[in-house]
Image (cartoon, rainbow, N blue to C red):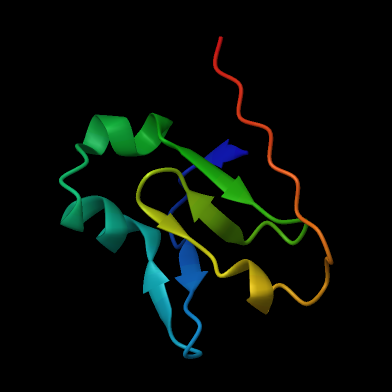
Length: 74
């Protein structure tokens, strides 16, 4: 888990990609909140989940048979 970085892209099931920044703009996330919003990434540091905004189709993840996500907020 990490925060947004310039150039982050999510890969769509049709082979295209979309900028995480565009997802934030569409959902009216402020510039400040964009910097602290959590992004879940895989072992290759590619975004697979932006909580409440976007998620990857888990079936398209061919490297891992199972995916375990633990969400904890202190």
